Length: 594
Image 1 (cartoon, rainbow, N blue to C red):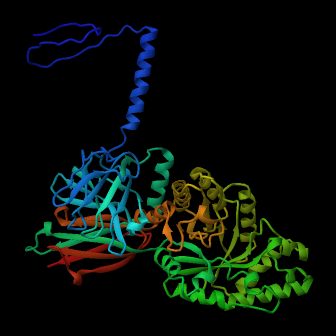
Image 2 (image 1 turned 90 degrees about the vertical axis):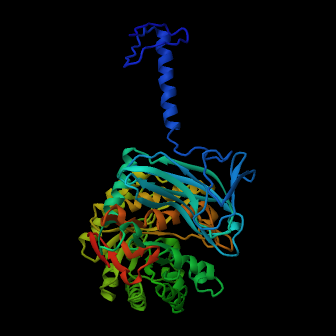
Image 3 (image 1 turned 180 degrees about the vertical axis):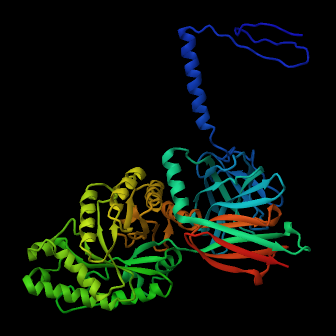
């Protein structure tokens, strides 16, 4: 048997007999020793935080830790995003071929993904680039999740920043592998600055994530019956969301949209948004800048184009009470004449666009301007405007709309009181529009925004974010700002829709520092990539399940329109395709494969 004691003043070797051992350490703690221990603990905690990174050699300063399976060829090049090197990937024969790495993850945990990729050729077309995560279960089955991606990437785009997240299945996972894929065969690319880290575990982050899951997702229960001659391992079921139900929209500049040469502008709107709002075309000052000289065609042409692509439209606005936006000819009117002119304008405009718009902002920014009430010496005149609009079209939804009510709290309480007043008057108020124009270089505070939204939710009507924009010179900061604002809004129970106040620097009222895309070719900025990642990947559902793991499974899906595809032995059984719409209630899919 062995029993020895040693001091820590020297390195020592213990020669022991085989068996079980207990090691005891006794310390006589003096002040210097205590200080040393505290320093050691602090360093250990810092190291623990740093060690949250899951990837090894994410900077690609060498090929270490990355697998480049044949036939692809990988080498380190100096054309890097940062640091001294990056990895060039060539000789790709399939879209799914790219460098990969096995990573250690925890079941049921979320991980944030960030990576950079640059195409070296594109054959004159756009390509999807993505990071995919493969999970191999202890039972031998596999699941695949897209962690981050971008569509229509070209060589001219330069370095593209992929941002996303994935959740590890709450199952027994044996191996997890992350890999680059996406471009067609023959397309070479360079990768750099990759990172995989656990999502923040703080209360605020957890609350937002759980709120989004509770509000915006429901269960899809899939039951599969397969004939006795069907090998379950050769059957995969793909549940893919094709359209989102939640309204994500943008302001549209009608003069550009109606210009036949501006196809890229129109295509971007049609591809990425399901709601829109005319930025200027429906404002009274645009329709009738001079008395009797009216132009409704500008707005009509645009709205017909939007609706032909399935895009719903908000009407903005019937009256604008801020003094500087009231036409000079209107300012010359008084008393009954003014009331009649306003009444006739509302009735004519609402009738002109009846059935074409879903909403009307009735009296825009009435917190910050009361010109009509002052001119008529009638503090309740805003209620008359609502009555006139509702009488003209009882089906259209009527809104208040104002600023400094969520982006900051300067007018939040005043807006609450106005909302309560209008609702109590029973003049058909449907919702509260919150503009969400954030200040210069102002990072939206999620907790603060949610507090303001909680306040306004006391009115008891839906809230729509109607004019969201942020401003930051650094496009990566701008991306963070947009994500913070969108996440706060999307996670709040009272928010029913979100519209941005434009996206293209050429026509954005705040210029390139607020834009998602820039230049004549509508080049995506980091902010644009981030917003589309949220809209089209992180907040959409696309899952594939192999029947080897079981013939019944549940997908937690975002609300919207879905397709279900059955793949057997690598080929789709098109006769088994199903479609459905997922709402607040769970939806069950039954599939019979024979």
